[in-house]
Image (cartoon, rainbow, N blue to C red):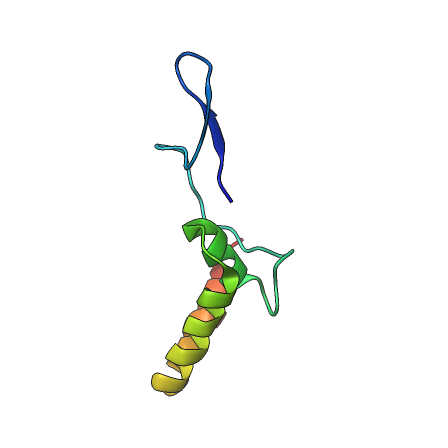
Length: 78
């Protein structure tokens, strides 16, 4: 997902907008549970599959500690 910005001459350029106000929001449209992984994926402009895979791997390796992080993000964000 790339954003389109206009240069000083009015030309369109594809790519991230530098200096744009970027804020984290839960993504309810791409949600499996609470939208945390979808929101992180939108924030970093990556596919949500990789974020979900990272959460699963981190939960297995960390003996479930990322479940608490996921719940905290779901309760605090939005």
